[in-house]
Image 1 (cartoon, rainbow, N blue to C red):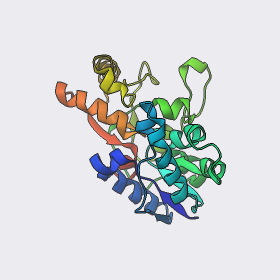
Image 2 (image 1 turned 180 degrees about the vertical axis):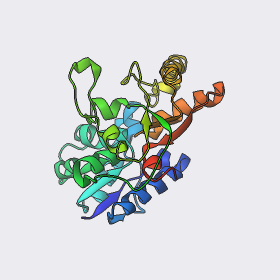
Image 3 (image 1 turned 90 degrees about the vertical axis):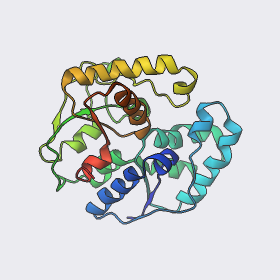
Image 4 (image 1 turned 135 degrees about the horizontal axis):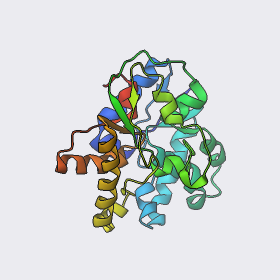
Length: 246
């Protein structure tokens, strides 16, 4: 198995510890991986803002770099969703694109669907509140959305349940948006913050000690609100928990 590790630009620049934790998780699972130094942004920020022409060369670059691997893994559901669901709009006739889309995975999705370990040799004795990011739910189908009115397996929670001692918060609105939405948080900041505060009130009532998610972008938004209000909640990407609280 050859795995190309894609680290999103905001993780690389702002949360490198998440990239390091992802490497530790893959190593603990005996996965051989490579981090291609030439990788760049997938183009999601540009596409979200409507600057599609600016996103095209980044999408092309992604295909050039990662097509050689058997799998591509990223600790970001939104970036993986960009590759799978939006590259077709940017570079529709690119050779190898269909194959690349099929083998690009979000970290927990890769662990759940491909590796399927029975457990992790780590312990995490804290109550965890799982934030389900919109891209992960509604594009990657990592869990079931309430608007679909059907029960489905939650892949991120399923993976986390294999960690010793972990406990989960029982939330009233388990799949509600945090309000980040990329550039939405900039153009509609007041609405974005209100949505984030509403999301966090659910976690506070549920007794969440550690807030986690598969997207550091959502957690970045919520962490800013937590710090401003001095809420007693720690923020950790799911990879950090799987790495033993690294």
